[in-house]
Length: 390
Image (cartoon, rainbow, N blue to C red; front, side, top):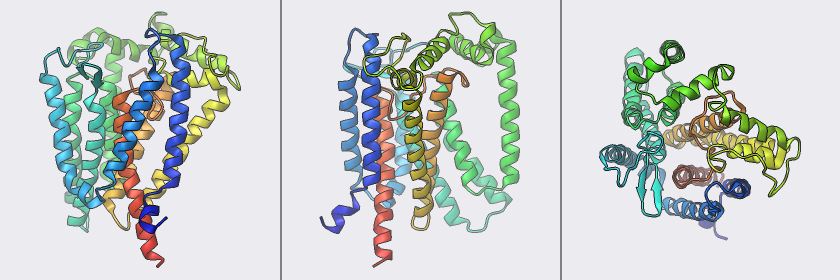
């Protein structure tokens, strides 16, 4: 194998991908034993999505980081345009689901634009920070305030469009990514702490308003009844009806019944809705027990560790690549924490999938596109190391 070929063989990332695919297919295979959708073969469909995703990873390796940096603005603009088109599209191609107009529904295909815009927004946020740092080598209050305003505006545009759907769970993911990027951007901690204090005050007041005046909150804030129920159930399950706590109860029952080693393949017995998507971790807990669940969490830890080390190492060569690594890390982190947290009952229930494991075309493809940039960053880091030690 020649040097050029070896640069593109990032064995650690390839092995991580294979392990995630295996976990995903095993979990989805067990989930579909519940036959929620008439025996539909989700495993085969997931294999198709992963295959398309792998091809996208290979295709994006033809573009270097500098080209991706230059294209990030246009990719971001295309993502925002897609969200606008979704909102104005007729119900024949964008049918509301659970009161939210979040999907393009085409014959044999459903796509959720907000999933892809997470990647385009992270790319452009990385470019904004990198460009700002190159332009202003010495930071002060004015330059920090300028950067903060830029980051907020870039994130606010897709967030406002997503909240119009409405999809508050996905909008929160964007805000988490924004928060992580602000912290890593080098903005003065005085500004960051002031921002955190303001955010906590506003968030606490908003949460208190929803809990105290749920009916009024629907009219003032515009959230749906089922979203109010989820918040109330998360805040105090004992004060809500058994119907409202049904998902929590079933998820806990599934996790607990798995015990240490689980029930194995074809052993799923506890029925709950959206087992192959939102509650895939409950399936893992019931099927493979505490040991299997811990190994899945450890697999995510390895991925996050890889992103941290890659982000730190590539910084000397490309600050854009470094910021993107940490932006993508925040995307993975918030999805894992929220999805597993809602399964355990420590977070409110949302439709946020467990990335790389939950079934879903939009989720898989968008994550694979995000990983393709990570893969390219890893390739360029390998090339730089090779040149360094020649």
